[in-house]
Length: 206
Image (cartoon, rainbow, N blue to C red; front, side):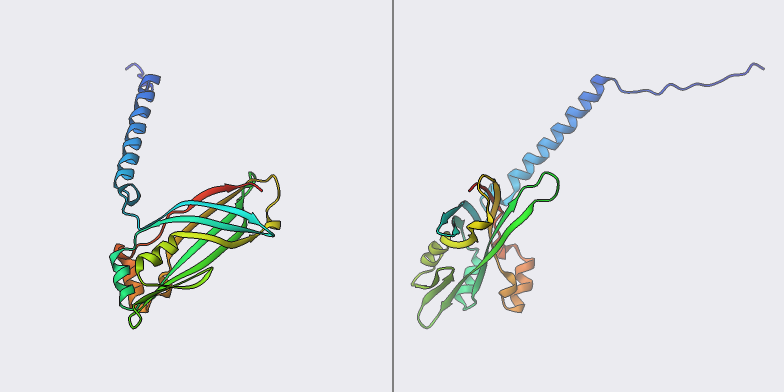
């Protein structure tokens, strides 16, 4: 009986098939990204807080932060505030120096507490921030104060070297840890309490 040797030649896809498959995957990924963008809270305008602009300006020996915030307090937060529960918001700034050979260097990480409370006896809203305490007769006035942060002393000028471009980022969020214990669980589990902006990135070159 003659010897029979079976040989198999692998069937490799042609270049045309390869690129066609790649195009299909890219198209699917692109469509998925578009869908995610369409249904995201930011795209729908449902985000309660959004940083609109931010800049660091030098004066004397310091840099001062100026930022505008578009905010819309969720109903759950307004209800809690009007029931006498103080709301604490954390405004955060980070400044980093890019490094091509390693992780970016953190030059500064600064936080500022902003507090709004309501006193039923006086029917006034109390605002506390980097410029001290203020009193308003309406919540809209207190929110207006919170939307425009100016002259917040954040950074010693000597920390930034001339001619070097730094990356800065700012955001605002509800400080859940300062809520009463029973509300902390609800705030962490319910989207009705969501008040966290995305990081707003900008560059600083002394």
